[in-house]
Length: 489
Image 1 (cartoon, helix red, strand yellow):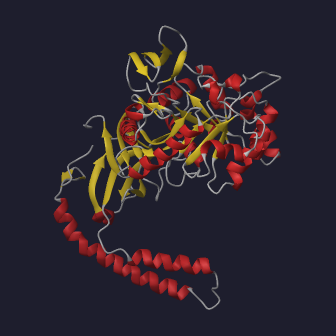
Image 2 (image 1 turned 180 degrees about the horizontal axis):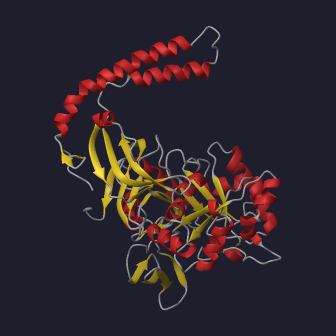
Image 3 (image 1 turned 90 degrees about the vertical axis):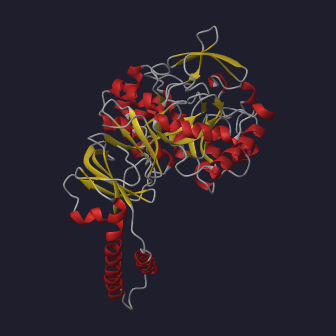
């Protein structure tokens, strides 16, 4: 699909883009000047002595400033003959425009006017393939041999270049944004790596790989009986509420997006309230690695929790008299009567951590709350064989990673593109509905759905091109193609 910088394909004919842009440069400036004149006249006339709404006046002034700043040709890359994912899961046949790293316009088939071509420098034919927002993985512990919780001293420790390496590789799997995730660790480790991730985010070049979002801190406020693979020596209770949280993570929490904790622990409810409401940077609190009952889950939601971490794993199983946290998915009426919303829930859909029937049951209960995560460890992407990860010996075969010479699961090694494929297969949902669980829904969890996880005018042009088998053919970050599986014919 991608053509050289000096070429474009318009209606099947090659054109000289440089000459085309020179010809239309004056045309666009004249259009901008005319539009500016009409807008200033219109907005000035509509402002009266009685118009005392400062916000309305500022909005009008900003509109004038934006138009006045149009002094160069707006360069657009147009993707045509695509099926574009909509927020309801349907696929719209049409075209999509990219400009300055953002989505500039979305056109239905047959709605493009001749004059629209004046600013287009490149037209790319998608040949009926699907354009989706890029995948967002809100729980990634590491990949490609890199462990985000590795705080070893010296050459063996986590470094900024390691994080950037993972970001560059993830685009191969369709991921354009991710939350680096840490397992339960010491306060010193948390603080060091939180700072390191912040530096990595600042150093990351636009379009250089998947966007590094705020961290997901999984622990250490867990029920010890549900610690799983987490080191129990670090597991504690937040007995002093927010003070306990600050003692572990530090007081600067701007670079934290999600915290997973067990809500039934002493001091947890106060900590949830502080992180989600009174904290200057609102943190998403998720319930996980927990023995919480159904009623304790409702209390956590009342306090501000909005997510359940890897549903079914590391929590009490559903029972018809003791539904536990899983029962919250089907409690729309009860929670609605309390003016509360059902929580989002994440699922590891590798076919190993959760049986396909359980995946289907959860989705049928609360489809709009489903969020796909990999929860992948450092062994993701290394391929089959025996690997050394820190002090662990891990054997990988397919998507199953076990401790060497045992059947004990060492963690997830599934990639997000495979999660989406298996989810589509297990649930029988539409392609668009499956894509929403890895795009819009995680963006909604993070309250970032105006900029990522969505294809809409003004959103970031973080996108993937897929076929009907959900293979990742291309990945775009910030309006730039950063991965291509093959040249489309």
